[in-house]
Image (cartoon, rainbow, N blue to C red; front, top):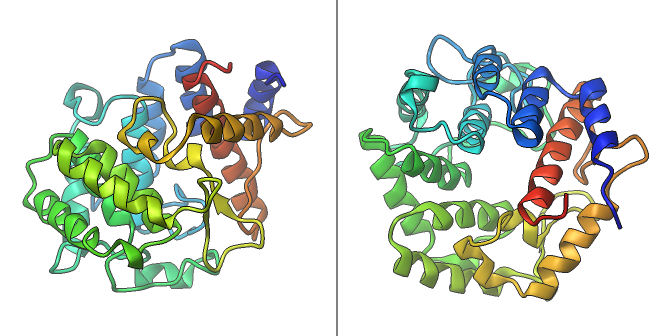
Length: 289
């Protein structure tokens, strides 16, 4: 198997969002991160949060937790979360916005009521309860060295959720691993990771409850880089098999696709650009491209 990087880049140039094309330039060519940050600003609202379908499955212009998390993930990817010289107050103000919509216990809702009036995926329904997004939010704010009081509150919420791993599945486990790979308490994190192993299928994957028939979260989706603590959950054979499958997943047009519901032409093309970028980043991290 061999990945056609040139075809993947042509696909991105032809079909991906400007933001993702700039991210690809950083990944493949060591380009400046400044255009990534500037493209990201277009999704930012005056309240400090992010919207405008930065998360392709919720198309509301208003700030949303999922889109704001996507912004933090992009900044983490380009190693700019704690670089105020590059991002200015972007992270600080996004954190302050999240604090305003978080619950009293620190948990962050999955989708806000404002999303209901805009096109959105069937699973993107407003809910007041704290969601799995809290894990990833807390992880990224740890990396950003945030001193916002809510960041510490969210971290406590995450540790509390990890006391009952039998209640966690699908994306809850995936996002919990993001948190456990980032927090400074390595011993406590390693113990929690071990308990999450009971939630995995024999091949190391996780089914997605309520998803499509074939929708699963695979080992490299849960632990995308060598050296992460979460790698303790997976055997080398499981990782290699998943990387082989990822290589095989390149489509005839050069891009990769996704296994969740495609419900809108815009959503589909935007997600394909993002998952193609993620596929290339994962394969590059494993020296497969």
